[in-house]
Image 1 (cartoon, rainbow, N blue to C red):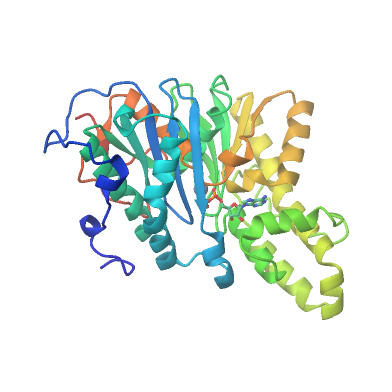
Image 2: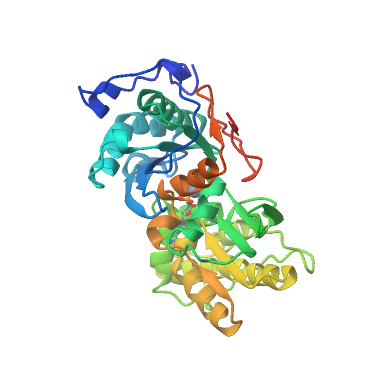
Amino acid sequence: MLFGLPQTDAIFIDLGRVIGKDFMMTSLEQSTSAWMPGPILGIETSCDETAASVLAVDGAVLSNIISSQHAVHQRFGGVVPELASRAHIESIEDVSAAALQQTGLAWTDLTGIAVTQGPGLAGALLVGVNYAKALAYALNIPVVGVSHLEGHIASAWLQDPAFPLPCVVLVVSGGHTHLYYKEPSGHCRLLGATRDDAAGEAFDKGAQLLGLEYPGGPAIDRLARQGNPDAIVFPRSYLKKGSLDFSFSGLKTALLYRLQAMPEQSRISRAADFAAGYQEAIVAVLVDKAFAAVRSSGAHALAVVGGVSANSRLRALLQQRAVSEDLRLSLPPLAYCTDNAAMIAAAGRQTLRAGLRASLDIDAHASLSSPFAQASNQRL
Ligand code: KG4
Ligand code: ZN
């Protein structure tokens, strides 16, 4: 048993219901013939969104379905792993079927499946990985494992396929604050990363201290619009000169001390100023370091991806700065910022095009960290 779930291959998936009664399994061995370019199904279950998406043969997004579990976790103030796994099991089939239905395609039109293999919650990942493997087996098509980080990075090209390389990519999510230099070959080189909390974690923990609902990032974003970012100024951690690393844990402590030093009435009446000042301290450092990375790397393009890239203040500052510094900026539409399966399908499509695929014994990797020390794909 893992996180209260049965063993990997015992997770029940009713493929008969998904694919329909006419479906005939033609072979017991998965085919190892080359990938036939065609529509790809992407599946994402690494945390608290069950998501499925279908990309067309040319990479266009035909559908992008996301079933959020926020209502499940809200009263706990954060994601409860066991509840997340159960909610994924309950909705994975319907979400995938809806993604396909929206395209008007049949299951048998799919030519490949891409699934998030890690990093993420082990039990949650298992649901997606097992569903993807079972479906790939039944349809006799290849499956590829995708790093969640690689998916976020690929989201920068979903709306803007001509976005240039080389570029700098800032990944800002609940688990990561990473700066990469993406070379013309597509290879990502790490330039800097957080030494403690991720930017999304800083938003979520700050929101908790302010008594806001989960998830904290969007709640701070909304409240901050009514506040003055200069009214309560928080420390900005730049670390040593020239460093492209981040540190957000001190900021959270500063917020705690400021709140403790104030009478409850002022805490309530000044909540919007707190939110605006706290948010400013996070986004100012993100923007400064991202542009510093662009300058020092010699790239002329910057992509900012991941859940925190949905932040309205961050987006506004990035856009202003990109204009004043005359560089190309890719800021994916909101639907591609937070977790989604279109980005997983996009990254998986590149893997399939490179002639790689996973074998059917791939497993979830909760701590898969680097986007290029890739999932278990190989030339089969
Ligand atoms: O990429 P994502 O959906 O999941 C992970 O891979 O972690 O990112 C989730 C994070 C959460 O910490 C959430 O609070 C933050 O993204 N987030 C935001 C906003 N929307 C989501 N943070 C700030 N402002 C937002 N509008
Ligand atoms: Zn994510």
